[in-house]
Length: 279
Ligand code: SF4
Image (cartoon, rainbow, N blue to C red; front, side, top):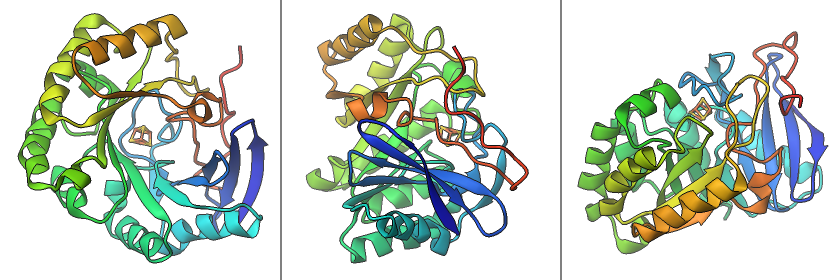
């Protein structure tokens, strides 16, 4: 496998990861030393806003291909202090390889975290107990109908929150603090007060932090970002309701750093989709 730097911005560097079978995924180095790696070629969850799953799933990455993304970035001369499995793919659908990768990261003193859509739920229950340095569960909805639209192959909200409510109290306070929920706000999809309030009702009893992400448009989706003013209103509404909320960092706001913007090519003949939708 081989890494090629394809895009550099103020905070981020994006790499195309060319795999030996002709497939390709992407990785992003955030803020100089946090590396976001991909876990699959494509994704079966098929979130409509996301470029990563736009062509469906081809296969999971091996441990060597996961670790190769870290080594490739190191060989290009960039330091790596933290690793997050939040790129192309659903890490829990490639559980064995991602678990081995996370354990290897810990051995090498690289703090490993991951982002998941939450399923399969028995896997999520396992991951809550594994030695990760952060587990973010992408929720993006307060109502079941919205969840089914935005995360079509992820678990429904009711069983997901039941599992979290049953599992989180068994974790130490320090471990609980490493679990967070994500809400990616998109215009006309999940940015209404009713949707947000329904999410708050589910999230508040858990006592975990919420990442409120701004959306970056991608070529494969018609979804659109909300305005900055609305984004700040949503943040204030969540905070006023008692949630601990974090907004997108500047690195994530950049076009090459946002949630769902990384792409996969199933074969060398597939052109990687352009980074952002043309204006
Ligand atoms: S957002 Fe995550 S789970 Fe959804 S399609 Fe993209 S990579 Fe898969």
